[in-house]
Length: 432
Image (cartoon, rainbow, N blue to C red; front, top):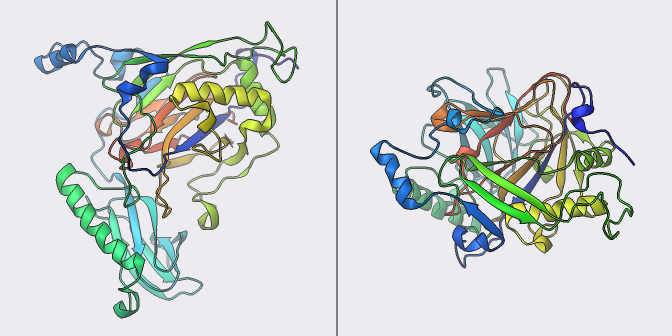
């Protein structure tokens, strides 16, 4: 089948955003050394000696977005945000009964925000000064109200009968967790937001030493640019199937670690993903599994694609593996990757600031996010990182076929609170 290139389509054509989220494996053996990983990539970067010049006022590296000269990037604010800031928060329910959680918006009951099972935990994104009210599940019996405090990331709902729970594994783990959190904050000046206990990630992390740093890789899974002679892509010397792809990852933020990858997919591949996704989207939810719920903070529609859905999609995943420096055989939903998530937004729809990591009670975390742009909206619909650049924030409006890569974890195994991001509302047109 032949498809028009996105640049030839009307400007109000749908935009698709596709996510892949990757989970690290819970092994304590070692911290991956990024420099060792460069066996299948060539990094273009300056030396540590040159970097030292920055302290003397003659830095050869970009110091801000304006120095990168990339039209897709801009600050959100002229000056850093000084009022209420978003923050990650963990809750530990030491009661022997399930609880429902409501955000206190000033109404009588509040806004439903999920539930926490008996002797279990949960995590959410909130703001300093915001409060949550907890009720016995299925009743209006109020248990407690908790208000978010600056510098505090974990909040405990105490048991009604300590003797009933103090010998449970969850209670004892929570006590150890509180002690570890306190020590980590004293030593590192930041809260521990990851699962406890967990070690350092063993999956590779590209270096992000300075703005503008470029990592160049070559994928053996080149782009498919038109109808292949054979749908299984096994035809010899097919002019529609490129043998290789040269790809550059450019650092556009160091806190959080964000890379811009231009021209990752061809227009033909973008249209193929769109065709597969059209029949699979439904109203998006917040949270996972039994705790998932509909929320006005996420008003899009979502669908999922497996790499085995087509030979072309499998080839695209192989290219992703090169970009991420993760072996191709691991990049599957039953290994270290989730399926490809495709999201659709209408005018006014958005996904307010959130983290891709969480605390679901398991050590596996969303280690990184690869975010692909299929088609741009006429106006709005970018991706923002509100905590980047010291609180000024960064917003990104890449072109079709580009991608963003960011790490949701830090090298020590903690989740990166700076990776807070948002799907900005579509002002005109729609995005798929």
